[in-house]
Picture (cartoon, rainbow, N blue to C red):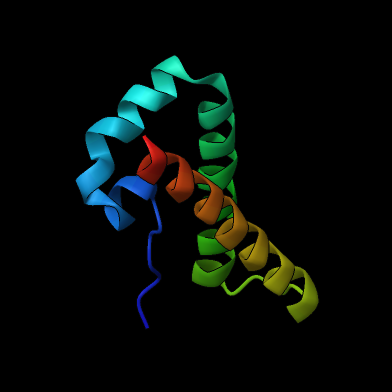
Length: 79
């Protein structure tokens, strides 16, 4: 099964320009976006390398990534 990259510009290509603009003009968005991308990278690395991690920790990482994505998406939608 391929490991999916959940980068914001991949999941929301219609907001690619807005994502880039907000990263340079909104410090809060940039901070949350950076955290989201770092967490996504960590999750993909664990999946790719089959690094042992307990299910609870791994699931919490995924839940946190999803929560961040929801917040960022809401910011993108609201203008």
